[in-house]
Image (tube, rainbow, N blue to C red; front, side, top):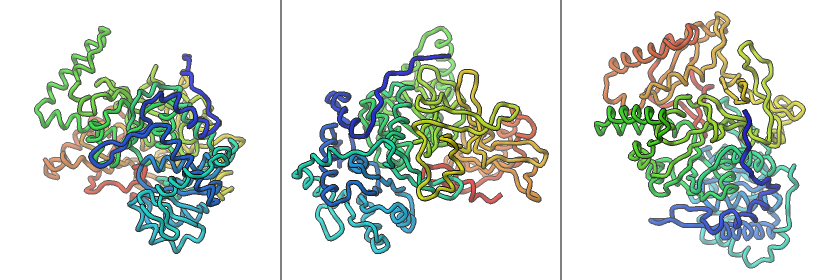
Length: 556
């Protein structure tokens, strides 16, 4: 199967991308963010002015070509800081805003950051840890109005930069192979590493995704922006495509902000997709329309079989609840059960799954909008190659990646780098296979593999995907108890149910429901993959800031 990829320009640098934005946007807003009761619009010309002015001011202070950290909620100022650092030949260090104070200090010290730009919510944190940061020369507050010693005002710095000759800053540049972004991962296995990325890494991955889809005109940035997934594909890809980026100010306002900004595209992790699906059916049930919705789905399926598409009309209420314009969702960051792709497609919304890892900037593959394969994580993007090594009888094996999206290595950690990079090939640590059309399918993480005492291998993510089809299961982790160092033959599912559903039943009733529904799931699975026991939790699982469950802290 072959298709012509969409024509997308290859950008050599962030500066080149920024300078071409006026021609791409053609007068449309680049950003929209909430400002009090209203919406503040930012054009690409205004954004470039902030970037160049901030960059010139940093250059005057001798900071432009060093390491500059940024921490806080998604904002135009956060994104402008990123651009100002890398366009000046420096290195940006995006810091996870969910980290405790001591870990924030560790990242700032380990990276060697000379300046840190912070949002209003981190003023007290910066004042608290200032004494333990000998390398940080200045703290730049996005909401500060005045300068005070080492604490500077972002706005005053930008205004000062406007008065400077910006020629030297605008002429400064990093070569394409130079470190530009230093990202500290927060993995599900417990230990973070500094991933070194170049401008070429990030731009290649973003362009690779854009070649697989038409992104629409308006998107809403939802995920934490310090993650490479959100920045490269929720921000950079959109800028390349001339998409207006609306900023969701808080996860709690997600549904309200869909109404406010009315995006036609979202980049999400499974947590949001699963929540939206549960809300659709919960609202139908609450309004007495559950049976009506089922009938509408059946009618739509019959019409589609005749070549008649009435989905946007039949499910207008659902689409209106999601802002009214939503047509495309890109989902990645964690495994998502295959049936969600069909479930949203049935409502008239295309859901495309992709796959990536921070070390690959982070995208490796994504389903193209012209031919989505449910259950697949898509075709490898144009800037990289994917191969499967150490194949098992079923064709699955380790996923290795080589291309312009692959990192330089781990910061100050040559041993860890050597363990995953061989002749330019990166070992993702994930297990999967390629089908006859070149689509990639993922089975699970090699580190999560369960080797049963009967010799059978089980990837828990696969079983969890089946269990997540039970609509009132909010979170689940599958494992096998250890006995004498080996996993026993029986799989255990630890389950956190959806709160509103659980509140309607006694513990005994909920237990009986799960017994029946898990028995139904087991019917579709071979014996060794069936769940033999389940445990109910009364609290959510501990998660990384990317909302992936930390498996390593779960007691078996």
